[in-house]
Image (cartoon, rainbow, N blue to C red; front, top):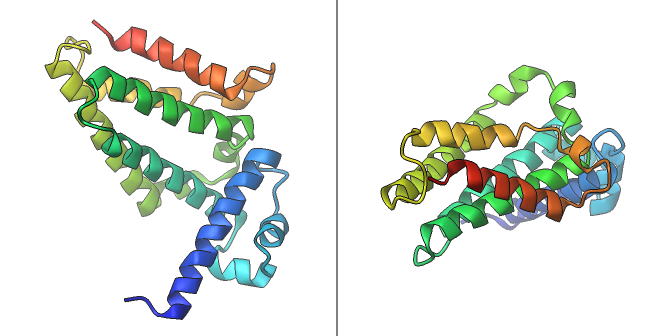
Length: 195
């Protein structure tokens, strides 16, 4: 059981990550400062640095948390739903979350962060778990004849994951809403993987 101090630390860290996410979505990566995050949470900058050493580390925590949520979302889908409805819902939800981050110019983070950061064990673990969960859902759909079986589940999963590397900031720059963009990309993916 956690001590009161440990519980407070965890709650404060959750509040920091949540505030950082909202600020990143509102202002973008470059325009969001650690001062902004500390002010949003109502803590000192020194307290913020007890949790996260840099804006990069905090942003990566935001990204990892959203990847964990995407993986949990797939696992939590009602198994009584038709498999393609579960595939569509998981794709739509994940793409919408990624598009929001792209519209916030978090795409620029990849260019600003040293590549070895993406070798971080927490990032690697969540990336692997998300891929495994996605592949399991794809394989289920293949067994039911709902997804192409001439392609491996791993290839389909990798094809889908490439979508998340797109420049969403550029795709929303013309005023296209995150919702419409998510709907269009989900439709394109569904058409590509159906028999």
